Length: 246
Image 1: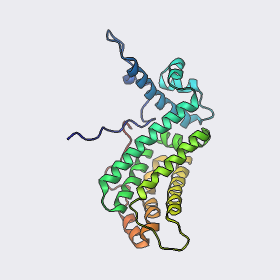
Image 2 (image 1 turned 180 degrees about the vertical axis):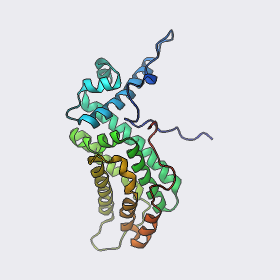
Image 3 (image 1 turned 135 degrees about the vertical axis):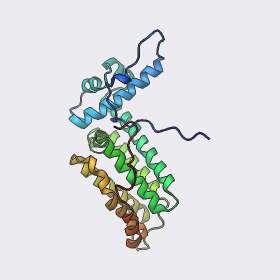
Image 4 (image 1 turned 90 degrees about the vertical axis):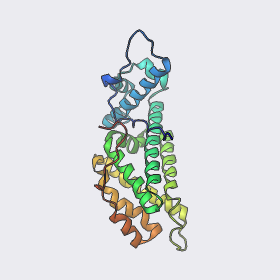
């Protein structure tokens, strides 16, 4: 039986101007849709690298095109402007990360603490493997306008699915489980974002123990959370990396 297709490369994992990605010229004409797909992917990479380096406000379309090795007319054939390109890149990138996390979660089951830890570890490892995407998606998204912030909020809401098997949570008066899940997800996101903001994305895997404890303790109690955390060693097995990351 054929398995699922491999995830697409994470934007920013490759150089847009890599000669190996150039559209080959020859007697056989490359289909227009293939040219457009190649240019789009290179623009994704160029946008991530320019936005991560210059900031969203200072990254110009011409900078992105130069980093991607794509002309301005080709850019505007694909996107209506910088914000449209940012949103497309963000959606594509978070879809790749979410697919990798979901696969890790499913493969680590059936015990929820193990599955949650595996998804967290994948998130941290993948973001650490492409720091430019981490900065673009977690920091610069705030500068990219209300549509981008809505995309970020939708992403955080989607992470709630990793807590569906966590159990009912504490039987404490006034503690609503849905609000508790949102609080845990928001706290994990804020902790990761703070490390990326400091320019320390490569250190994200070191957060695995504390984030594992934060994710599991509200639902399992301190004793079970400590057990899950003891297994959360960043050097336990090969790290997950973004597709095409060096």
